[in-house]
Amino acid sequence: MQFHSYSSQCAFSSIEDIKGKHVTVMGLGLNGGGLAAVRFFLKKGAYVISTDMKTAEQLKPSVDALMADKSLPLKNLTFHLGEHRIEDFENADCVIKNPGIKYEGNKYLAAARAIETDLSIFLRFTDCPIIAVTGSKGKSSTVSAIHYGLTQAGYKSFLGGNITVSPLTFIDEVSSDTPVVIEFSSWQLADLRGRGVLRPYISVITKIVPDHQNWYGNMEDYVADKRLIYANQSRGDYSIFDFGGDEPGTGPACGGTWGNLFAGETKATVLRYSAEKPKDSDSKFFGVWQEKDESGHFTGKLFLPQMEKPEVILRGLSVPGEHMRTNVLNAALVMYLMHVPAEKIISILGNWQGITHRLQYFYSWKCGSKEYKFYNDSCATVPEAAAAATQAFGKPVTLVTGGTDKGLELDPLVKVLAKPEEGEHPVKDIYFLSGTATDKILPALDDKGKTYYGDFDSLEELLTCLKANLVKQAEKAAKAGADSPSDATSEVIVFSPGATSFGMFNNEFDRGEKFMAAVKKLF
Image (cartoon, rainbow, N blue to C red; front, side):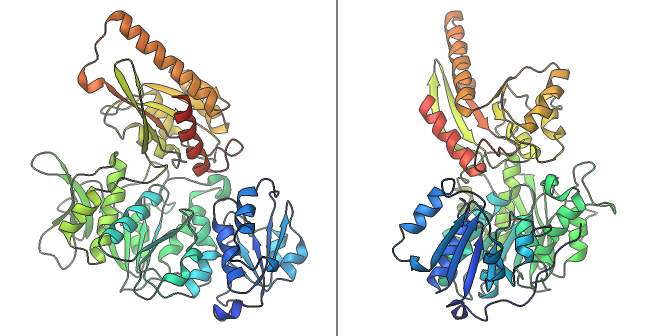
């Protein structure tokens, strides 16, 4: 892939220089980024054109929010929705680009005099310490745990980026000592290439697995954008990378692991994270790892160059899932680098309840002698994340999954559904939403003789079937006089799609909200 590199020069010499300029915001959207950009530039005195290929009806929530905001000079705002007009790009002093729009082959962006993003504007005109997180799995959980931890420790911290909060919403509230935690997608990082504005104090790359292969076509190009997160770091900064191996066939073409490749490239001080205690032969390991204490309970340990012996910085957690331990442990490491004492980290992160759409417990329903607990994991958009969700609760679960294919290898999910390995929990029942990813999974399950329900064209149809089946099970158990043992009276139903659901939902957040609403309505 030929990567586009942007100019290191900005259309604005300062925030004050925005006044009177003509700005086109490309992509109003529904996730808040375009909305925040329109608000920001209007408040700074610009003449703004908001353009999107979606219609005004499709974008009604965003349009209504802007038109109802009486603090904005709405006379300076023009909507061109349902289309793009080339003159809006040719005549603008600056175009604010949505990260979900490719530059390559886009005639509108090619016509622009200058292109920025909400993140590039924020990074150009602030000097606060940046804690930047990217990766394939666990980004949102990691940044949320970091932000929660810093806030609880007494910092005035802000959270933004890919987690659907534009940093332009708080740009006027930060100073040189305000830590800002930013989640970066690969697309958001690509939009910063060549600008030289991202210089994080701490960068974290979570586990790398195949993602967005329908966009990139191969792992090398996908990871090339991820590597931009540490490109401008220096020795006084920190880079935190995976110490474990990659999934078979997903590592670098040159051999080795992604974590080792990153560690060899960054100029920052390298720290690593591991799911197990490093071997004695790993004498140069500095970072964090997981191990069990004398009682067999989880602990997270830290060892840095200046230390004589490891220190415990994490103990029991409130959030479920082994994979979540890695995310919270990375948050603990960041907090330690921000000078939060270990005992305070243990206390704070032990109380963290997780985030919406990530193994989020939101509802319970009693049927017969059993209580069913519903979890929303809609942000699981890759097969590996859905597979991990099936093992997060220490017992078999009922899984609601499926959706639209992103060009990813689906084997990680198929294996745990069809034939779990020794030590893995089998999935009790499986319910599928329709979609191109589901179309690929079902034949593999058929070949293995695995039963399932669906596929269903709507959540309502799926949940109606699920409820009917649970009621039948309760009635059957009552007739048989079955008395469930105490450890089986609570069962887990988790919605973890492992795919996107374009067409059925606006995005994974809309999908999660609609799932929770449908469950509460039907149960």
